[in-house]
Length: 281
Ligand SMILES: CCCCCCC/C=C/C(=O)SCCNC(=O)CCNC(=O)[C@H](O)C(C)(C)COP(=O)(O)OP(=O)(O)OC[C@H]1O[C@@H](n2cnc3c(N)ncnc32)[C@H](O)[C@@H]1OP(=O)(O)O
Ligand SMILES: NC(=O)C1=CN([C@@H]2O[C@H](COP(=O)(O)OP(=O)(O)OC[C@H]3O[C@@H](n4cnc5c(N)ncnc54)[C@H](OP(=O)(O)O)[C@@H]3O)[C@@H](O)[C@H]2O)C=CC1
Image 1: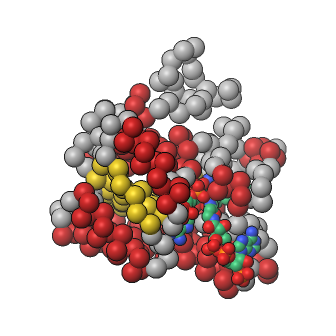
Image 2: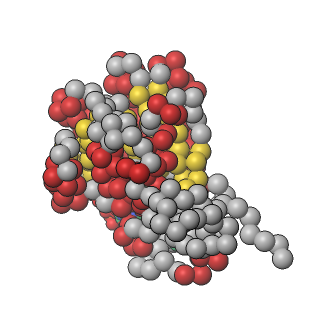
């Protein structure tokens, strides 16, 4: 535990930089009762943790991605906890596929109240080695995918009296950094898109916000980093640890709940302080 933590022994509601408690210790059990939540990339990593948490708070949850093998276990897990869940495949880079996904989920659950644009892709590469296809694979998933899901589900939300959208950005969108040309540009676009949507769709009772995870330990980021997260990175993280999917969950739940009714167009880093400047001394 870092020296800046305030923590009492055995107290799960500590305030500080320790572990994030399970959302069920923080939010009402029925916070999302009668709500339908769609999580893209909901079969792995952060998306899976978010999908399970929404279900724990009463939501009907749809998880979508390209590969059913990732999704089926999440549906089974939610159903085993007594919730309702549904999975369907989608490639968020293809608008037709996205529109079919929206129709299918609306047909299954009768509507969509919350959209979590979580599907993502990344790999690290020197910019001069980035091929047009590599650019498209990443920017197509991050930016086109977020835009297509927002347009398709947004149309439905506009017709149906509102909703809340949260998109996963990344701290690498704030300033350029080596090996992130595609990912950084795509994530910057995601935040800008959420701000525009927030400004235009407030009249439709739709809120849109961006969450920027720092480095969250998942199989996806480990693969994107080339198989291992270098420990040296921890020197730049005041919390002195990598994040976990559980660290991202409460911010997603807060931003899509009525507690955030006046919060839209925002950018929320969940990064253990990674974006803060390092000491000049
Ligand atoms: C160390 C700290 C890192 C901090 C990063 C923090 C910011 C963000 C983090 C995250 O987003 S973590 C989550 C990442 N999760 C994933 O990436 C999971 C999904 N990943 C994928 O789907 C693939 O890895 C993919 C490559 C991103 C997409 O796969 P797809 O099947 O669509 O494409 P391919 O046909 O395999 O390849 C397309 C194109 O891209 C080139 N390419 C793929 N991998 C690499 C690589 N590691 N290095 C360089 N180039 C790569 C591939 O060669 C193809 O291009 P062409 O050869 O056809 O020109
Ligand atoms: N982990 C981290 O350190 C950070 C993560 N983020 C962002 O958070 C989000 C989740 O990251 P994380 O959990 O680590 O990543 P994962 O790799 O675990 O998750 C990515 C998910 O996106 C899905 N996906 C990828 N491409 C597509 C596509 N074309 N269509 C539909 N679904 C797709 C994948 O499922 P499938 O293969 O079945 O399609 C997978 O479930 C991403 O947006 C990521 O960029 C941002 C900053 C840091």
